[in-house]
Amino acid sequence: MSIQYRAVQWNRHKRIYDLLLVAGVVLFIAVFMIVGLTRWQGTAAAHPVTLLMRATSSCAITMLSIILMIGPAARLSPRFSPLLYNRRHFGVTMFLVALIHGAVAVFWYHGFGIVNPIVSVFTSNARYDSLSGFPFQPLGVLALAILFVMAATSHDFWLKNLTPTVWKTLHMLVYVAYALIVMHVTLGFLQDDVSWVYGALLGGTAVVIITLHLVTGVREWRRDSRDEGQAFGEGWIDVGSVDDIELNHAKVVVLRGCERIAVYRHADGISAISNVCAHQNGPLGEGRIVDGCVTCPWHGYQYLVHNGQSPPPYTEKIPTYDVRVEGRRILVNPEANPPGTEVTPASIPSETSGDRA
Amino acid sequence: MPVAETIILAVASYAILGVVFAIWFVFRGVERFDPVAQGGPVSFRLLILPGSAALWPLLLIRCLRALKESPA
Image 1 (cartoon, chains in turn blue, red):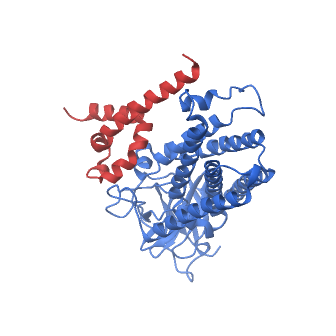
Image 2 (spheres, one colour):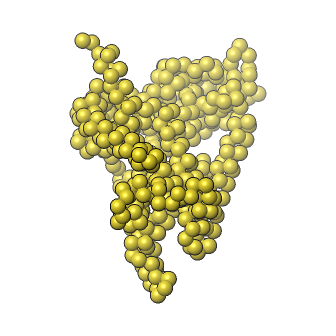
Image 3 (spheres, one colour):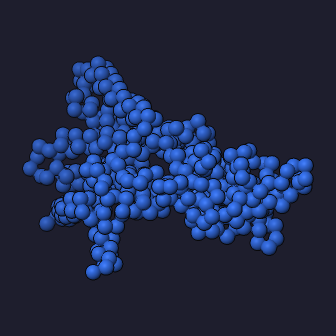
């Protein structure tokens, strides 16, 4: 949340995160280089530049794999949410490591001829009709180009001005980049006679990433089926009992099979807002009320529960829903109000006078 | 001219035009359609420069539209 853009919105948590991140990258590359220099000797010895390329590529693909695991892991367990909080810096750091790998590789393998190094990347191996001999370097360049666009647009300025939907779609290209990198590395193995251990690690990691996504998808689908609101009459939908919801927490409910809302119980009663954060589509219903505001569990964006507006001077808004309580049952009008619309919270009758049916 | 060189030339031309546009955009144009950017520090402007160079056709259209809609 910001009222004026800054390059980086630092806070203590982000500083610690970034320090650990940079330390991890430096340690990974240093250990890889030292082990490589001491272990591969004689005829198997690799030039330090070659080792640097291997170290940066291994580091970048490890980081990308972790990045792809963070999202589904955080959906499965809130313990992983702290990793999600600053994933943007993780992604930009990963791009910079990949850029070092790409730049060193292009100039080391293509920088000493008479052909332009970039042209040489695409033309030095022209076996585009071969499967095992297919040129793997252009695949890496394409992946790097995608990662560049993603890193270059990793700022709230772009999120706001491209709109969250376009921004999110653009950043989903990470899966295309990952596929290109897997092909880039696999073809590199095939053509360079590298140890099978690398191939096994790459394949194993890809299996873990795919499995995590599938498990999360199935779990979300089951939860959506279970938490779907039931028609009550006159267009209202019964979304459950007030006793199902802990104070200052929410229940996520699916309306009309597709729209997720967060039904919050708070000191003034019951309110319903969209479950989708205006920042990066974070699940607001999995957050809680902090300092009187619904707080997104992903990046801490906040909204006033009765009108879906970020507290002044911030300007983010999300849709609200009309809500009422009959006995102990919560009824929601599935027609969303425009973002930022004030809705009086439904008061909760005392348990002694309430109907607990 | 071979296909690869033609494509590289096209990409390089796009990038050069993008950098020229981005320099103008981050220091002048950005404030025309995003009030939050007004008075933004140089570090922020430099940070959005690569993205501005990459997405310059989109931003150019947005700038022209903003110019058209602003009162004369």
